Length: 395
Image 1: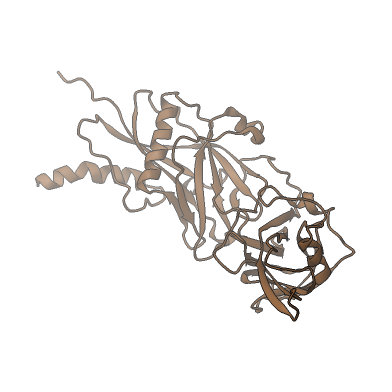
Image 2 (image 1 turned 135 degrees about the vertical axis):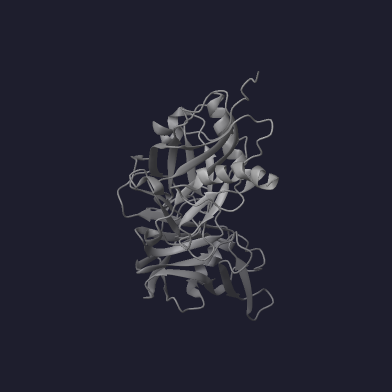
């Protein structure tokens, strides 16, 4: 009987979380009550949300995207500078070789062309607008790729490579397309193997023919979008909250904690979402999503000047179209969210909201859609809080 009496408060606390709410994941248990006063739970209502997209700088992603899919057109920029192993400029022929990883959309052939780029660029900062008017339309190399092909390849003029060896106008190559009903995913130079290579056939000083393979030194996907939504344009309280790795979509949330007493001690906070499964698209690995605290009020005024918390760790969780809920429920994540709420309660930091974003922008076309502020109450994003008040004096 004594054991049952000890368990009853904990069971009651868990039941208070779960009644008429999303089911909580395993491991999210009530805190011990000893020396903590009255233990309470609170579901902070969502009072504001905003959807927007930011630029996708994909030069550091482990994959490249090429083609047209889901409102996104993707080209690829490649730069080969490690040509010192070729001891003469008498290149006869070069072949560009790239290995596919996955394919999005229709399996129809992707018909494309390759052109020399005519301006300097860096993979850490390049975007499509930097290249769209800076490539040589007069020099064209062709390729065709289908979903069943084991490699994407194209013959490149030997004289172009000769100029690169002589360090003349080596700005790399642009891969673009005339017809694409889908998008191919390829390994980038940030991957462990099978990145883009040039297979060069040349005449060495000793005569005869020799072949050398040169790996790419810089590469990046370049994105262009069909929709008219501009970068950093906030859509207030949308019906859906979207994370899209190809478009850079992300969102802001703000929860109302004004009813929490200033003397409240926050023990844990659990952030949860309901996934709109029919509108989501992920592979078996899902999409890694992280959360950051906004520390400036500019988030809702000018998103370009929004600043994030850089002191505390970033909660992360994997969202998938195979699971109807997403919880940031690991112990460090729950602790982070709890300390964040505590700072809000004590007014050590303004409650300017949180930013929810992907950790994988630019590397694939995966998309996760969550129900937003206009959905029925049980499907909206939730912030569950466990807190205690000081023990009441006893006489």
